[in-house]
Image 1 (cartoon, one colour):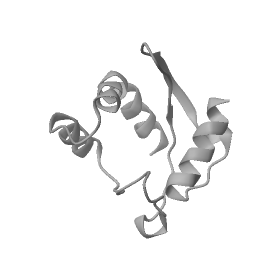
Image 2 (cartoon, rainbow, N blue to C red; image 1 turned 135 degrees about the vertical axis):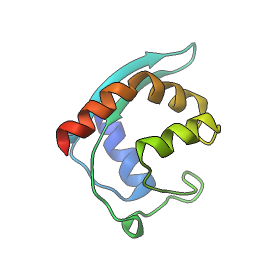
Image 3 (cartoon, rainbow, N blue to C red; image 1 turned 90 degrees about the horizontal axis):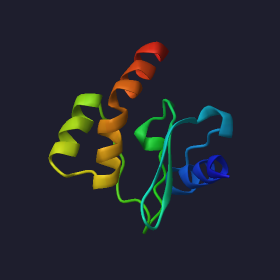
Image 4 (tube, rainbow, N blue to C red; image 1 turned 60 degrees about the vertical axis):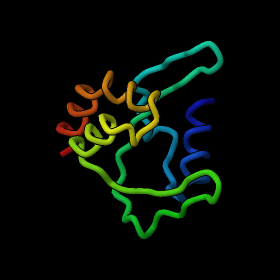
Length: 100
């Protein structure tokens, strides 16, 4: 399932473990070649505990919503993720505020 895949990929690419139930599906999309499920996961993990997978991930940072907005504007985030962030920003902010 896509939840199994997101758990596996998150661990393989960052060393972060999370249970399938911890991921919240926020949207599903499709283009001519690919089906996308977009999940939200809130975890407090120190950057020094993140283990990047060579060839798959090249950096990690924690960013505020404003920093993510800036990264989207500056083209520092791939277009499909930036587009999805803009579409889901209000919902993500509501989730963030509810968990704080």
